[in-house]
Image 1 (spheres, rainbow, N blue to C red):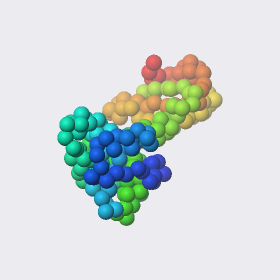
Image 2: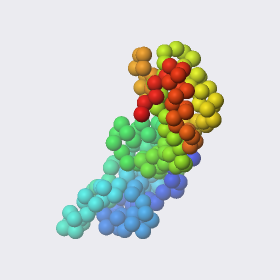
Image 3: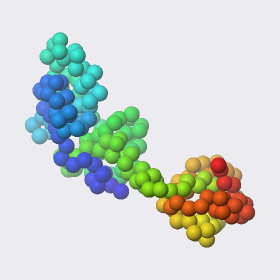
Image 4: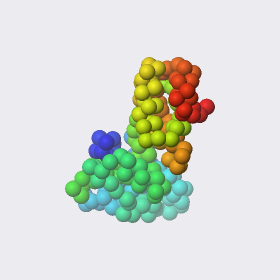
Length: 197
């Protein structure tokens, strides 16, 4: 899953010489919280709603421009990178969004909200479902066995994630299409797996 397919393309941009008030008005008009700052066709910064709101009252006392409050040389990501890499960078650097570049040209922006939407969709949280947390019994075939038990009980896996990989205690969480929990839990326990409640 690449950034180009999950970003907001053709983002609204602003000049570094615009006022803080103009930038806030542009954000409010278009319902955005990030404005790439472009000068002579080149990305030179990023202004967020937090940057601008923090500076707003000071800008009433003196003439502050976007250049005065923007992040200079913001961290960017290539449109061909994965959403997972974008998520790692946003998390590591405590960002709320990043400009997306392609061949040195600004083509979009990917935000924390975009990434959250991807993960919510991948985890199947937007549809009615059943969550099942399983501590696998020891053995290399344990995960395949859990899948087989789920299928045999009429369950259908939407997503699966590993919660713990500690030696001797591998815990997986399964998101299933809405199904009866208790018969499934009993079948898994009978096969030696732990069901966490």
